[in-house]
Every structure is written in structure tokens, then in C-alpha cells.
Image (cartoon, rainbow, N blue to C red; front, top):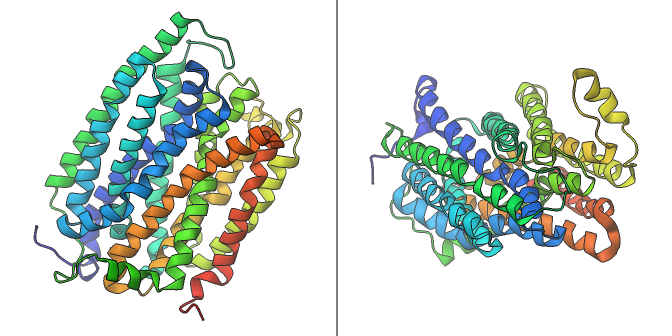
Length: 433
């Protein structure tokens, strides 16, 4: 293992390089994660999938966290956070190349396996980079640093769907149109070059992570992740509740970002592949506000509480709104040359604003005071990302069960209620008694 230094003990001028590397990792994570929102309706149309079948494309990506969460924590403990970032990138680069045979054979099974493998890579990367950002400075301002990383992550979420729509989708077929086999072949072949480029870009970032003169976090050399350490970590209620909060948050975040395209496809919206960009744009606004206000004008707890309330209100607007009403887009988009979109569709995008501060606030609150258990706790928190596998499935099942494409979004409300509970009480709990 490379020489390990304590980032927190170094002066502020030395933090810029770790921030640059961590920022690049978050950008790559954003590119891969939020591409799901663009490719899901694309594959739904190309492979003629039902909404429930399409939800498995997203779920297979996030279920990888359940498989790789604890193994990732063990790996990071052995090789270090910096090498962990490089390994995660290498797994993601190799997995991106699997999309080429998947496209050639037009087999959903290969797409799902590729999604699973690239999800494993991003789990390793997430496990390495998140605690790195939290621990590179004061914990009181950790949410601000995570916000900065989130800006890069969500910026990728704005850019990637637009590029995907311009490079892959543009000029192929109209949303909701019945496809001929020739059209399906054209759509499939259009995926090959972009995924080769994605694999190459991620490989370059892997080299950057491996060979940059980056300091690593301090490790207790005698500490090994074991069943005993996991049990000890789970004895902290605020951490366990934080894991649940992360799981429920990721579920609603993924619903807002990755199902909005499928909902737009069902409404016959032509530019369905760019809808994720609207959700990510709203998240960027939320992150920017968080950076400006935390911790000077608002605590992490207060931001989390407001996020829970905003989520509940916005979900009600989605469920109760009319698809024949265009009031919001006429006020917010049309005057600036944007499209006219139904109010419920735009409210799904506005959930991005409600979601923005949840992840940055829960992480430092959940890791507070854990010391040497931080690495294992981070692995458990990363496992919470598996909630992203549940969210789209719930929407698909709710749709098929009779709630309809719009009514199924009401299943998000319990998640926001728990987030509100964690903000008010859960993060303070240090005992189960």
C-alpha cells in the first residue's frame, strides 16, 4: 500500500488536488448513473418493453450495490481509497464495452448483465470517494463539500442525456412510434460508438486516480473489516437509520430522474430522452442553494427537514395534477424558448430540487462520531444505494396494479416521511433504548 497521510492534518492549500480527483470521480459517476434515465426509455421503445420490464433496466444497475457493498468496503480497507477509485473505474470501463454485444444481439438479458456489472464498478468507486470527501476537512462543512461534488455529479446528469439525445436518438424515430426491424437495427447500432467512447473516457480517469500524487485517508493497520466490526457499526442507531434514509432517498431520486423519460414516452413526448436533464437541472439549483446557505445560514439538519417537506408537497402535485394543464411550463419554460410540458411531468422534474440536499446532509450526520468504523459505515451507507433498485420497480408495479402511470408516484410519500423523521429525530439517536 502507498504511504498514507491524514488529509485533515494538511493545510488548506493541499486540499485542491484531492478535490480535483474526487470531483472527476463524481463526474464519472454522474455520467454513468444518469445515463440510465436516457437509455431506459430508448431501450423500452427499441425492445418494445412494458413499463414494468423497463424498470428492470434501472433496477439491475442499483441491485449491484447489495452484492458489492460490503465487499467494496473490505477491498478499500486493503488497497486504500485512492486505489479503490482506480479499480472502480476499471470495472466500469470494462462493463461499458458489454453494451456493444448487447446492442448487436438486441437482447435485454445482456443489457441487464452489463447494467449489473457497471453498477458493481460504481459501488466500488462510491465506497472509496464519498468518505474521502467527508473526511478531507471539517465535518461541520462536509455537506458543502459533498454539495460541490454533487454539482459535478448532477452537471453530468444534465449534460449526458442531452448528448445522448443528440448523438443517439436524434432523427431516429418519434417517441411512442411502432418500429420496424430496420429501425430497431439502426437504434441498436447507434449505441456502439458512444459506449466505446464512454469506456475510453473512464479508463483515462482510472489512470488519473492511480498515478496522481494523491494523499490517502488514515487507516488503522490492525483493523480488519469483520463480522464483529460490522456488528459494532450496526450498534449505532443514527448510522442504521441513515442507511435506511439513504436507501429511501435513492429510491425517490432514481424515480424522479430515471422514470421521467418513460412517463414522457407514455405521454407521447418526442424528446423523452432529455427529460432526465430537467430533473438534474433542478437538483443543480438545489445544490447551489445548499452551498450558499450551509452551514452559515442553515444547518444540515434543517436542510434535510425542508427536503422531506418539499418532497411530500411535490409528489402530491404530481399525483393530483392534470396532464392537460401546462401552467408550470408556460411560466418557467416557454418564455425562454423551452417546450410546453404537462404539469405532472414538470413536477417530477421539480422533485430534483426537493432531493438535492438529502444525500449531502445524511452522509455527515450518519458518519458523525464513528471514528475507525467510518470505512465499514461508508460501505453500509453505499449499500443503501440498492434502494434505487426498489424505486422504479415500485412505480412499475403500482402502474400495473391499477394506480396508473401517474398515481403510482404516490408510493414515494412514505420515503419522504422517513427522511423528515431522520432530520427531526433519527440522526440524534445514539441508543436503541
